[in-house]
Image 1 (cartoon, rainbow, N blue to C red):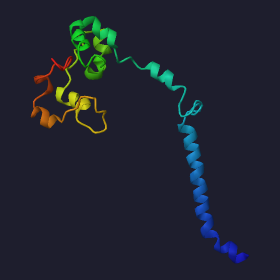
Image 2 (image 1 turned 90 degrees about the vertical axis):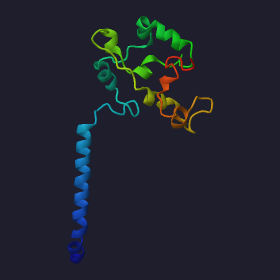
Image 3 (image 1 turned 120 degrees about the horizontal axis):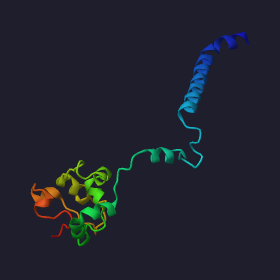
Length: 152
């Protein structure tokens, strides 16, 4: 029995280290994870209050159309009718609030069009896709297509 206790030291030390590690993990986890996390599944109810504190960054479709009616009409007549302005132009609430001081940059057309229309087997067959390297020979999409109504 005495030998058993003497030889078990090499087992006790790793067990103590393991228990200390688990204890440290639980203490840190309790300090880092909010108390109400998991109350509604994998969701923290306080997240909504945190999100409400952030400034609004998107103006919304109706706001864009109030000043840019001509572009909205061209887009409404074409294949991009259901694509929101800010999907291509980015969040523009600051521009809508102060159009004179916040001038949005035009999107980089090559990368923007490629993001949706580059040929990809995972996309539905009915969706317009092109292999941009073969299709344009390196020219930008807006050389031949109008972005708001690409078939013009």
